[in-house]
Length: 394
Image 1: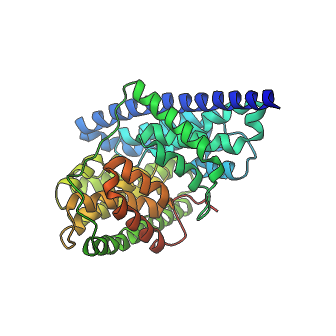
Image 2 (image 1 turned 60 degrees about the vertical axis):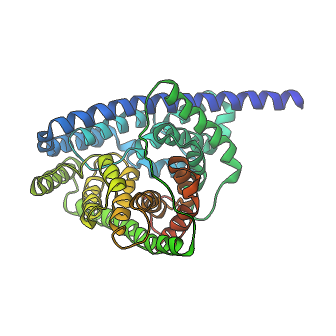
Image 3 (image 1 turned 90 degrees about the horizontal axis):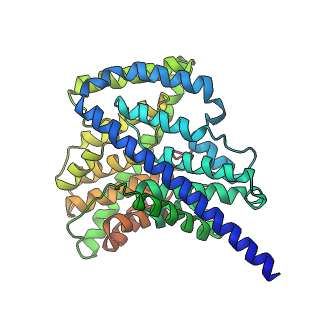
């Protein structure tokens, strides 16, 4: 009996290290490449003119080679809920390539979808060689998700909770939490050891918790929840309209690229394209107009709704930070605090992962923001409706 338990412990330790290393190395490569293509696009704004052609090429590649991975993050979630078929290895390189194309030419998208899909797809390959992994495949996939998320954002505690919270609304698989946390820490450590930096945000100081401050947070949280709901609805309806009017994928993505290019030309600015991280820094520094959050929402909905690859989370960060910054004109809280709270609350409401977002707030901005983040994430989650960015959630 003792020998059997020792063998299982060694097997699981090996799986945790293997999954974490695979996810960490893949995400480190992704972060380096993403920084490079983003810097190139920012140095050459005219590249936005190539977005329609890039969209056509991406659509053709995924139509020709990407049918087994068409479900994206929702496919990963469904497999973690009810394992059926192994995720194809091609999911990792194809989502990596697709996301880099999106960002190289100015699509408004995120990166967490790429990290989660790469982590899960690479982890799932271990089921080819391990009987233990095959029998507990749902745990392997959850570990891969957490490893990728942690490696990408540098928030291992939030990553572990995200993996057990995202599968179903209001129900957490607590039994998987230790495995997900350990894998998240390994993935995060790999990125740190490789010297790939994460984006860092800072707030000056969180005011003392009092009734006025919490009341302002609750009011802002209603706006955050409604904004999350607006993104979910807009992106979903844009996708439905695009699929109905443009059923051929390459043409659909190309038209989406044309729309984004035209909007950017009309605005005369590329501030709202790509990840939008500079907008987050602006939001933390001073109050921005409400239009910044709306424009980022619109461009993200078109980018992802029409078929470009990437994720929603970083755009959600941007939308939330910009909205919080705008609300600082009227609410009695510092602009950086409202931007930080919006940063996590819009994500919590749209992804239906409030616990992970509360922990993420404390990992990114310090424990002092915990009470404001908890209230904001809970209220935003409550007012945002049942639908989220991940359709596969139970």
